[in-house]
Amino acid sequence: MTDAELKKLTLASAARLVAKKEISPVELTQAVLDRIGRLNEKMRTFITVTGDKALERAKAAEREIAGGRRPPLQGVPISLKDLYDTKGIKTTAGSKIFEARVPNEDASVVKKLNDAGVVLVGKANMHEFAFGVTTMNPHYGTARNAWNPECISGGSSGGSASAIALSLGFGSLGSDTGGSIRIPASVCGIAGLKPTYGRSSLRGVVPLSWSLDHPGPMAQTVEDVALLLGVIAGHDPQDPYSRKMPVPRYTEALTGNIKGVRVGIPRTYFFDHVAPEVDSAVRVALKTLERLGARMVEVDMPTAALQRAIWTHIASPEAYAFHEHYLEKQGDLYGSDVRGRIESGRLLLSVDYVRAQRARSIMKDECKAAFKSADVIVTPTLPIPPPRIDRLLQPWGSEPETAQASLTRFTRPFNLTGVPTISIPCGFTAENLPIGIQIAGKAFDESMVLRVAHAYEQDAKWFERRPAM
Amino acid sequence: MLAFMAFQSEPDSETLKKLAEVAGWTIPEARMQEIAALYKPIFDDTRVLRKLNLGDSVPATVFEAE
Image 1 (cartoon, each protein chain N blue to C red):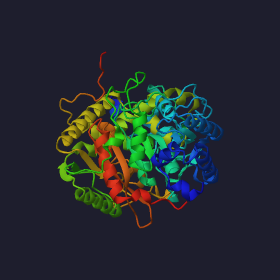
Image 2: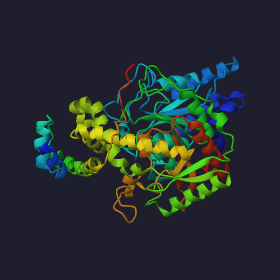
Image 3: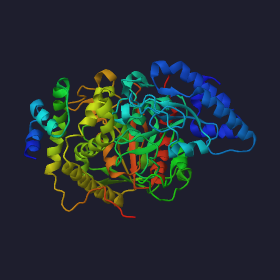
Image 4: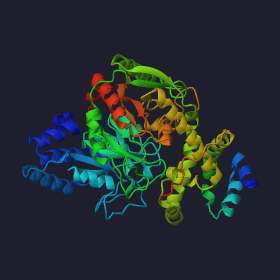
C-alpha cells in the first residue's frame, strides 16, 4: 500500500474495506508502521511504537475475519494518548516519573476498543501529565505539526492529533481538561470530541483534575469520531464519575439535515480579540450553517469571561492532590513548566477552591439557560491560528496576552460546564494552517453536536485537504 | 489567614518562604523567585474570584449519598 493510498483512508472507510476483505489488516498495519518508522524521529508523534504487538493483533484480526467475526473496528490501526493504561505496554503520561510504568490492566475504554477489534500501533506523545497545551515534552521531544513542523501540534493530546493528521493510524483517544482534545484537533486540522462529563469512563486514565478530565475520540472526520464514541461511551460501575445514561447509535445522527436547528452565537466574550483570519473563517462557517437551514440565535454566557480564574482554582489544587507524593519524592524529574503549574495548587486556599466550584455552578446554570433557546452553541475553537513554537510566549495581537495563554480561552468554559463539544476544521490561513470551529451541545446530546458538525463538514469538505508530508 | 491575604497581594520570595515553612514545604533557594513569579498571576485571578457575587450558588461538586 502506498502513502497516497493510505492518506486517502479514514477510520470509517478503512473499517469498511477491512470488513469487505478488500484490505488486509496486516497490510494496513504494516503500511502504518512503515510510515511511523519514516516520520516519528522527526515528528515525535509517539512515545512508544507497539510494532510487534500490532502485527500480532492484525494477524489475529485477519483470522477472525476469515472465521466470520467482524466487530465494528476490526483490524483498524489506531493510537492512544500515553495516559491510557495498556496492559503490558508502558504508559508514561508523558513523564519521566512513569517512564517504566507498565500497567497490569487496560483502562476501561481501552478494553472496549480492543473488544471492537482495533489494532494499537502506539502510545502517542503528550504534554507531560497533560498539564499544558503545546506537547513540547522535555522527556520525549516536541510533537510537531503535520502542516508545518515549526508550529505546535497543540496539547495536551498533541501526539494523537499529529498521528491522525499524518495518517499514522486512523483514530486516537485524547483527554481534555481545559481543551486538550479540541486545541490539538484545531491546530492539526482534524476532528476532536470532548464528550459530556461522565459519558465515558476515566478508569485507568492517569488524572490531571478529576472534576474536569474528559476522555474522548480524535479522528479525521465526524463519522470517525462518532464510530469511536459509539465504542467508548457508556456507564462504568468502576468509575464513580461515570453516568448511567442510554448510549444512542451516534452514526444515525449523521443525516446531513440540520433544517430548523437553532445555532446559538454567544453575544459576548467568544468573538472578542480574535485574529482576523480566524474570525472571518468562523463567520463564513456560520453562514454555511444558515444556508443549510439552521437558525441563528443569540445566547449569553457572561461568566465564561472568568474561565481562567475559575479553572485554575479547581485544576491546580486537584492536580497537586494527585501529584503531592511524587513531587515530594521525585520533584526534580518533572519538567519545569509542569512542575510549576502543579505546585501552584499548593498554597491556594481551600475556600477559594470552593468559591471556584460555586462560580462553576453559576456558569453551568448560564449554559443550561442558553440551551433553552439553542440546540448547539458555536464559537471559534481558538482565537488564533496554530502558533509557531518560537512565538508561543510572545503577545500575538494588540493586547499583552501571549499566543500560548490564548489557546484555552474558548475551550475551558466547556470543561467547566461539562457539556459535549467538538472541534472540526473550518478553513485554512494564507499560510495553509488549519482553523477550527467549536460546536457545543446540551449535556449527553452528543448526537446533536455530531449531526451539526457532520452536516457542515460534508458541505465544506475541509477534511479532504491533507498535509503534504 | 492575614499572612495569606498579604501574600496574595504581594507574593515576593520572602513572604513565600515564610508561608512555605508554615505549610511544611521546603522550596530550594534557586526556585524561590521562579515560584513567586508564578503565583503573581494566579493571585490576580484569586482576587477576581473573591469579588464575584456568588449569591446562593452551591459548589459544582456536591456529594451524592447512595
